[in-house]
Image (cartoon, rainbow, N blue to C red):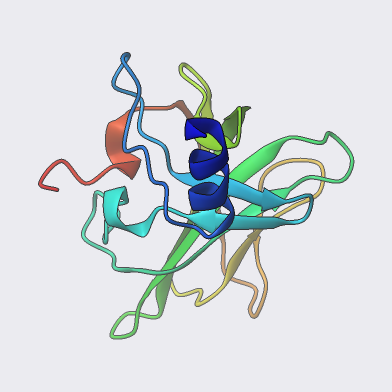
Length: 147
């Protein structure tokens, strides 16, 4: 009976496990093969430089089958942008950052829309300006420490 109720809660989107015993936060859940649910309440609202995060989604790379959390933000006054993708791992139905997984970041100065290039790196989609690409190990920068 407990399993049935847990399954029903999961299917209806009512189950949210904030973290496991290792302290790694659940950032999303798989609903079906191509549908994911984000756990917005545990995720930061801004990048570490203060840029507001305006959009986020879970993306599966068709070539590698890797799952990523992709986050984007803009600073209107300076026409700067930031995009970050963090590798996730599926544990049961939960998506978690993969410690010590990779986080890639693109920062565009004078570029309002950076994108990741297919073979690595970044480019500015709407101008000739440059987006700087960095790769780092996952830290807790995704998770809101004040929740």
